[in-house]
Length: 224
View: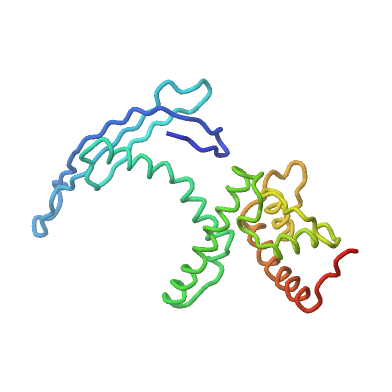
């Protein structure tokens, strides 16, 4: 299994031994007989890392599930799902802190559902931008920014026009967007977080639309 990098360890390829078995949790003896209950059948999956590297905290997961685990492939599927837990936690963090969903204080369930539907897309985009910039930072930013967006971004950050002919890299564009949201980019700051990227994207939307409109009204003069 490919273990992704996180603040506690570097990325690595882990070899796992996976075992699984079924068992039942019996009804407590003191449970009221007037309302009889049935035993609960569960599946247990144990995943342990073989021969971990020195200094690495080895994987040792004991997973309980009500899903039917009848084959090695289905057990591996559950282990793979569990391996995504940190990414899922980050997704919910983006919804709560990056998008500020909790601060909306909406009064009805319907409004909460509509806000969640909208911000879920935003949270996915923010999380994708964050990881894409770290994993594939040298790729072109054209995969997520249109021409007028990266041009207006470069002109705003560098405070000069015309913008460069070549679009910036993915990592450069994300860092510039984050700087619009308050990211300082000092030596010890590391990579920008989702909150500054979100604030920067909101500013970039207004900047790029103004840029596009101004160039439609008054096209730039081509150099002789």
